[in-house]
Length: 605
Image (cartoon, rainbow, N blue to C red):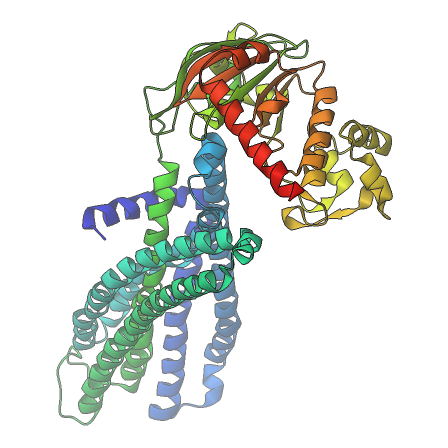
């Protein structure tokens, strides 16, 4: 990873620590108290052993020291537990805030932006990568402070007793962070690549899982299985590379800590044998000093070793931060009107209950990066009227709907009942819209749960009335559980046509003034298509409606039709006007008729 980028990501990570609240400082405080208790424990043990072994004092004379020692043992355990709990709470608060920020950003950018990546990639960012920030705040950041304070405290205690031992500790201490950084540099880059591989694998696997039936239909199941196996093997190798780095880091730190402690042990050993006579300030070597310093030596290096052990948490966090910052700092193009998500306090009040009228003038829908997707478009949808939008794939139909929903920025003018869309509170605007897409999305639960989503307090009679309007009540009544008929993940338990009509019943329960329909019959057979269209005509009779469709034979009852091609309106008028007019609409109609005729001939044969 580029050094400047790594510094930026590290700086961003440290800025987020305020989300941890006082728990981060509490973690450090408990760690320091644990360190002080270790010094006190070593002092008490050394005092007792020196008095009993060297001074031949009776054990009863050290009752007070024994009592303090017995008190320190459970105290250390309590402090260690409190430190872990405080660290966990700090990490939890941080994860909650980051995850909330990610979800808010995705909500602000909208479905049009989210569809740019597979669902598995977003799941990786929202779940795994946010989780991988935990140890950085719960363990690594507190350990950085403890790695400075605790060794310094031990040096202050040891220096007055033996300056040589203190110098040995001081000289060998830098070896651990130096080798920790050398090993950690590779670990950070390996983690970043590992996160990228995980996001790709998640997206790849989720897409293939969703399309499993289609893959089997075209006999591609085994081939895709081999690709998933290959991607999984690549991810396994990257994961093992990261683990090797982590284990190598721990082994290196343990080695240098052991060597440093061995040097101290040799120094005191030769000193007790009389071969070395420096470092004791001329006071002579005592068992107390040797025991005290040797017991503190492992604790001197322990914070540094712990920091090395947790250094992979920093590498993980830096790798995760790259994707998170790219999302959280994503800026919508400044030339587009982007006030769609600003505070509702600055928005104008508008009455949408009486009906909705849409007036567009030079309306251009842009991507979040500023690329024009559709427009400039000029049209008007009067209150209570029905408008259809047709055109070949890529002509800008879905972009137009996303612009109307406020999911994409725009330029030009789009007025709702005479008020510019950017001046209307988006949640209020969307609460008056009923949207029905080509892929019905029903949630895990019951039929009643899905239909009454807008109003969970809705009674059963009202739910059945909505199902009747959507012409799916007979199907529900035929089920043994009725309204409690279960619907599984991916709308399992009902057919596509039934799911579309249940989704229509849910839309009807929203008390909407405008229906936005995105090819609602695209994935249906002819029988289900006619049932859904009949239900839509009755349901939207009293409301404004804008429908994107590829079926031109459905448009005779529409008040007006927009024909889009390459993002522009190439034709506009009623069905009768357009079918007599040469142009794209007539060409599309002729193509559709020839396809329908071919299908009928196949059925007859």
